[in-house]
Image (cartoon, rainbow, N blue to C red):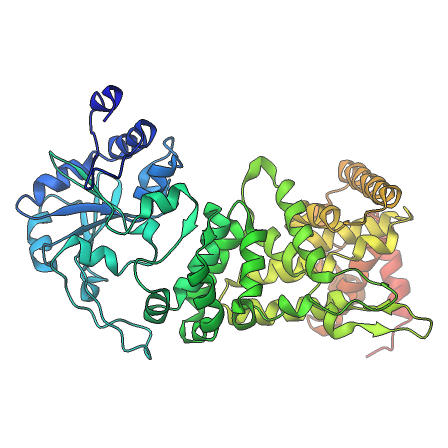
Length: 503
């Protein structure tokens, strides 16, 4: 190894001489261990047993993608808990960490995993595994292994089948060529891809996620296996699939992953509304390719995210905002194509699909709301925004207003420079109108000028549906005319009440 590497406080020695690790990579791994000296303590606790750091933390350290300015417990490498594999059986691990770990949990003990917390760090310690699968159920038949190589062989991809041993003489172990694959941005499985994917079909979703997250390309054999086996994904629980889909969308380059997601047939199992956007373009080209448009909107929305922080709700809305178009496409008599009310249909489809994928109620409501509202601006794109229309726009968007701004701006994918500029200028005017009204009114809390008690007293009616009806009338009045004085509100309410059928 180079002299500089020899001076590193925690050198990594390749298991094979032909597998050289650069100085930069050694430094990255050193930083990893420096971030978590608790690992050295763990090695001492497990004296007499093997202990190896494995998984995403090793991969990301070698890529130089560790985030060193936040605690490990927050998942700086994007891998969550630190993963350690050992030849110690779970009962031995429990005995050895007793009194040392600040907390212990055994929810995964049936799979050989003991979870611990120590000094703010979370570590999952798993006994070497040599699982077998019946290929029909979703869970493996857990069998403990006897060697590190055997354990690494059952992992999803070679880039995740690398290990760093803990202890005084740390070694880098890479029996399946994960490091050269990592350097070449190539995704392979340790064994035959068909066997690996059949063992856990979720690995197909993980593969397209890594395309987005790491910028890798799939080995041809792996790509062929995913394409031919995509239907197997139906065996996996929606919760697990949803977690991978979210990680794909939150990666730095989701478009590449999504294109693979669609072309392999996986999207047809998980999110069939996405490939459905690949509608045949009519002969007169009266509408754009909705699928390509949606991917472009997603890219443009990502480019506008504040501080580069990934926003799952915004990204889902950008991808799905037009999924109502296939169901609403109509060929007009003069050769045109229309998609009337596709935002209404799309909002319903979003709710149904995201519910099936077990997204949270808040995510479902937010993405559906953005889908429903994304066309509202175009009804006033000529700039004819009344104060009433602005109030309704802001009120209907609520806390999603900033994301709605981004979505609407991103939805402009026209190549006509003049039209694109006109749309942007028009939206600038709308935002200026919103800012002016926000100075004069609290648009985030638009309420009637009279509350329920005042309504009941003025109209001399008891609590019930009529009060709600009067309240809704005053709310609409408030939207149309802005704040009213109490005398004006009472006069308007009495006038409205006189026009209503009396009980």
